[in-house]
Image (cartoon, rainbow, N blue to C red):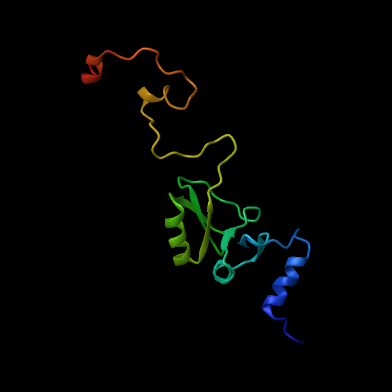
Length: 148
C-alpha cells in the first residue's frame, strides 16, 4: 500500500467536513481560515513558522481550567495551565513544554479571579459589589489616624 505524503493528507483533511475532524491545535494566518488538524503542538508551531502564521488552541476541542492567569498553556495531552499573566511568558513556556497558548476563558457570570482585588472587610462594599461609594470624603484626621 502506498504511503500518502503528509501535505497531501493535510489538504485532504481540510476539504472534509469539519464536524468530528477538529483537532486541539489550529494553524492560523491571514490568508486561510483556521486549519484545526494538529494533535501535536510542536508540529503545529513548526508549520506555523513555515507558513507565516501562528499555532493556537482550538477552544471548541479543549476545555480550559480557569485560574488566576490571563493566558493558558495547553500541552499535547490537552492539560491546561491558566497561570500566565501575559502572552510572552506563556509563549516562552509553550516552547519549553511543547504546548500552545490561548487567552484564558472566563466563566459566564464570573469575571475571573483577581489576585490583586482588595478583599479586606472594610473595603468589601466599595469595590465591585454594586454598592455606591460614600458621597462625602472622611475627615482628614481620620485618614491620618484610622483608629481614632
